[in-house]
Length: 281
Image (cartoon, rainbow, N blue to C red; front, side):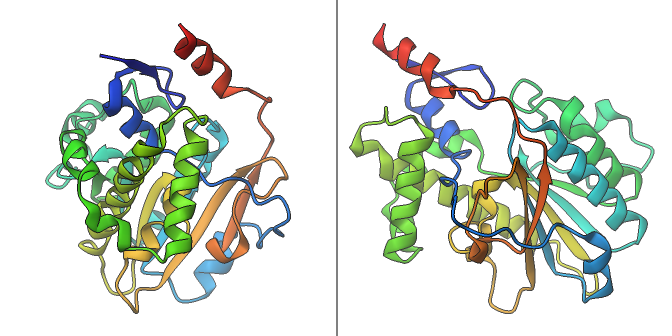
């Protein structure tokens, strides 16, 4: 079976299933001309009505984004406003519900069936433990790997977004896979992206509490308002989208985000070069 190296975590994944996992992390192309929203300000948010859902969109290889997420989770927990923490980094069906606040990191990882190779615990563990130690449940919200093949064949996902939004997803999949995917695989991969967003949204909805906020941590492409998780939230759900941005170049249009958390730019890296070289062989 053909193998492909995952740009996200450097691991080797078999064939189309590897491509499917990559699809979930595809990000939208930078919107260079878009002005930046107000810098993320938890204090200002706290002075207004707490959102039902706060979505924190990260760039997976920016460690400062995971630090920002931990700080945000800890702040909401300290204010007793955190209803739950929902993660792309663990599969739906796994949670810390039932664990005591004193649970060890090992117990928490076991409860979430944590994949340390894909999502290094040293990066995400601090945010998870901040919630657990505050007595707040942490829930996996990602589409389980075993369900991806079926989702790829389900055309119902193709009509969830307006045509322009669906095309944005297809374009993001093509770009996120360095233009190496055959055209016939773009729609199946985009269906996985939408299925992930739906699962994350439904996991968050199930944890809503009056006067409290469910925090969702996911890749930036998953949280965009017009095509991501917010598109699956019921009408009337008050959501706030904050994205991490490494460097000064805007990474999403202002209509797709409410706040930006800016961190230092990362060293330039051609993620596609090694993948193209591998495919030549």
